[in-house]
Image (cartoon, rainbow, N blue to C red):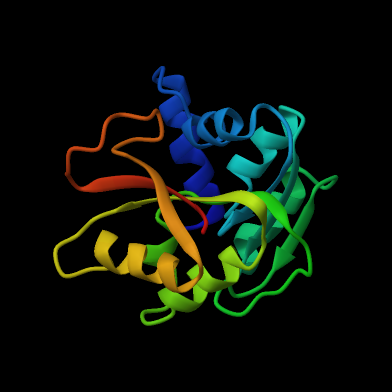
Length: 181
């Protein structure tokens, strides 16, 4: 999907009356309205830009040059990095690292453990790794994700069925909040 197609999808949803900022709402509520946030797999910057609009210090990282170019065009005042999530090191710590939009399903197969570890390595003490993704039979699922988080020194704090904190009762989508052990 191109950056323009990705942005058009969210614009359409907003025009239909849907909230396009559920991820930002959740992160905002977890951090109490302030802090540093890394948007890992930021795409064209939708989540980071909204968090910055709310007063957060937001930084984005994505491997896709077209997506990063789109983010830079929309918000040149923010910091955008083009790196592979499986190997990046910004040398900074964040109060939250958010992986919205099925980031773990778009990483190269077999790199999920490394992606989780690199994201966890960027958390400040007491920080939160927040990720939402589709659950597919035979795909990367919650058992593997929770195990990857445990290896990275994180424990499950909260799990929801939606970014709006719908109760987790199983299903095909999960939003998980993991914190350092």
